Image (cartoon, rainbow, N blue to C red; front, side, top):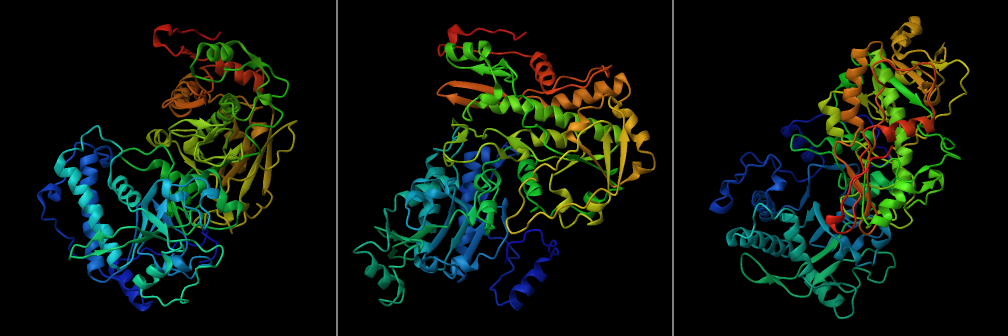
Length: 624
């Protein structure tokens, strides 16, 4: 209950202990000792060459049939079923919603089926809105009540999948077809009507065995449920109408609403269930992007105590202050496309970006070049922080990251995902996978932690006070950057002042910092201002060390998997541009500023591929 997800992690329970606790709490529970064995040949043996089953629509649909078999076994045994995908995090008790006790949810207690959606705009998810029926229903959170309506829906769902399998319509290139696809087909064919509709209410009450007046249909703000116009056949004979509705998207949230829009934080309403959808950087080997997002939000409980141990991590490095200072590019004039790694679209658009000289701070918010240009500076600051962490043998606490444009697989509208609210705030505190390929950081074994690390309940509270501040002589005081949003209901406590400070001269090489710290080199947390870090010399002490670091940075910060940001129609730019290499022998005679960093990045392996709409007019040029 409550709003706190930063409570101590729950103990890990055995299956038998979990069942015992459910029995004590009066919660019906069964321990499934032997999974059901399918008898149908079409799903008995699932074979696929894909490590990631979802890429094989036949295998994934076969798994869907087995899943529905599993649901049916429990429903036949008299259980209600609450099922969720493995990438759903449960934050609060869902029972007040499925029993209709939560405010405005009384009718949900009488629905056969409750399901989450992929809605990314809460304005479309009001109590009486039917817009969810035209969005994607997401079976990642699915509540099935032990009713004839549920039995009929499960039978229709399974029958649809089996029909597709036996007809041989699922091929290797039918990616995107899966059990959820067929659930959506069934739901959209039901011809759903709101039960409060004239001519439906009394009939629905009679079907549910409810007396007139037992449920108040006139209460404003109550969430609607919907009844199918026609009945579906039951496996045992006869038929049943189905009552179904969508769970509220604020409480049963998708990833865009929570991690990008931060709606729960703004409304001080923690989710009940959080589905890590609309994210990137997963591979067949592991869900790297999902785990990183949950770590950033303080919701991941899968790390052992050693992950939080400063001694085993070589100590931690924390960056203080904004990575991109508000006035860093004020008055600067650059070519509009300077920060893109690729430009494509009509010739007029590509010519404009290659030749038009602009003030990047004056670019409109719907222009993705604003995002890519500011991100050049953000990437350079992060590169420097990683270099200092490497030079001092520490683990970097990733700083809060900013995005000036959304990220999505398809076309953007005004730098926002098309399904998101038009008024979605830009820029916004963004998850790591919006900017980087998280799995590459794992492959390179780069020691980093999420920005929220110091506030995690497994992090020793003494870490927050065991900080030593590194200052550069002549530098200004750095203000704390806004911390990445954590959980609603959990205000971020202010950090105590650092326990001591160490000062080094401007231009000090990073390789000399460890020695300059003296007795403070063993401090659990070393912190440095982002502005101070820019006044140090990024040199790891030898040409070989610098070469090795540059090689890793090109993998982490370069466009390993380029991201496309469309501006209008076919006009698009691609990012992201990595910082320039530090080189074997960096020049420590000057500190770089924002203009120099932007210029250096634009000259480093810069290729543009602009083309007109007709491919035969394609040409290549190089930005000098």
